[in-house]
Length: 428
Image (cartoon, rainbow, N blue to C red; front, side, top):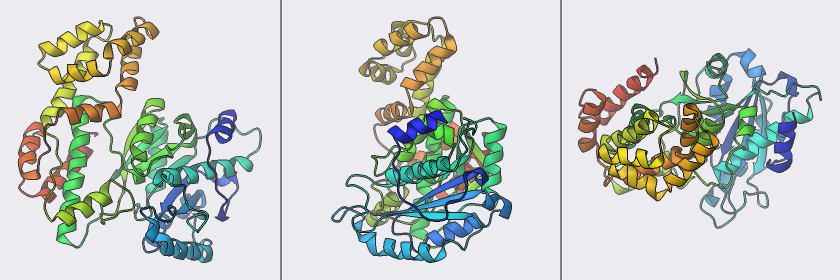
């Protein structure tokens, strides 16, 4: 309880709510849905949640954060649609098997501040829910809060076992957070379908590459697949607010540092494959750009970049009590000069000396300290540095299929179907 109060006092951002605010004691699931220009998509998202069993829904509180940037900023064209969404929510918030509340961060004078986007919208929803639940709790409530905080997007669909499967996985593995399996929904237009197949294939190749290299950050970072306990949310410092996109990457990276983060394959989230300019980068902008260029964009890193990462991580793991100079020399001996130069540029010797001082003689603690320092962002930067140029599918897949020992497909859709199966099998 004390940690929650401290977080609310120092870090929380809270909005007034309309709709239904249930008693804290009946809630096991909180679902936060940012919505911008989503009057046509939000009802279907809510209907997919409502398809979960009635008993699960009765324990669920859903918060929709209808948001808009200030006038003159990209995305402001969605104002009329957002006002229509607010009117719809006003008239329909009681018509669901779960408890539905919403907040207005879109009307003139209520917009998100300049420079903020979906990260702040997600944070506003989570923090507002936390504050409202705390208001109705008895003072003697246990400090541990294992209620689950789900993050969705308004154009996303979930399956009918969404709540039960996630709760079971988190509980059985005693985890604080998770990422749920995803598959982009199909699109009827062939050009869009090909673009999304390429994009999802690249995402899966990246995570499989990290997994084969032994990285603890080998999980996808899709905002609509994130879930954590409320306590884990607080330990992570809440949702990064000052990001117009990419908040999912940084939030999950912090969750992986502060808690046990698992991958959940027993249910699936289905993000939309539509083109979009609601955020500056990610799935929607990539599809829009690919369609505008009318040609395939080179997306793929070569597998050699992940082999370099594997060499670096295995060298650290072989003897984590060695001196920094010994580790750097071993990288040279293994012909991993790019990794050595990367570490040297980040002053690895000073960081490693600090780890040795804090963790004298403790192999596991040294490895843990290293991975806190060499995190998902550092990993991404090393992969970028080891990628002189990105590859189109026709050049990339023969390399990836050989590296992963998979069939060599000529069609991205076939390769994606194979890789989806591989991602599941690799965890079984």
